[in-house]
Length: 243
Image (cartoon, rainbow, N blue to C red; front, top):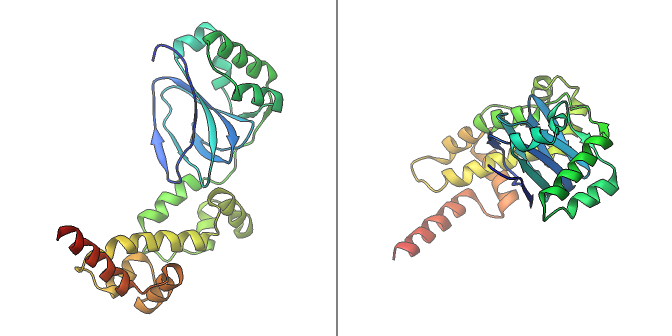
């Protein structure tokens, strides 16, 4: 890229990965974004300025509504203005007046450069990254929903006490570990129900439920209908679309 790009973005509730040939700064405005960059997990909330250096593979997800100011900055542009210090070390929390000024950024590269100089000069309180790496745990759980996941095992993988892990998990996803796991298992079940090739017993085992009775009970609690009824409705819908 030849010139800086400044825009406000909202990130989805699913894990994404990216790598690009320019520096990037993310400033939290509303909600929260979980970002993992350079081996650090950063909780980006209002006022948190998180750096992503050019070439770094990074992962992110947002467990709820969010608004983030994203600054895509060419390497040469940053070098010319001696702004490299913004991409060294961890994230920092900026003072609110500077955050409010950032929300109004626009127009010229000069205005952007001045704001970045202020951000670099303000320093801000450096943020200590969390010890837990949930961005590693969540995809592992999604990839093996048949596994009998227990909070004790999840916490052990993150080197945390169970109570601390549960608080961190809810802060990230907005749900308890059990609620999140049931939601993911039922999401897979809804996909598998579209096919007659798998029985409810096989489906229950594939999705991590103890048996078909446990699966049917959980499905009805969340969706208000039995798995069989859901399957019939899906088939009827497909038939109608082909008619």
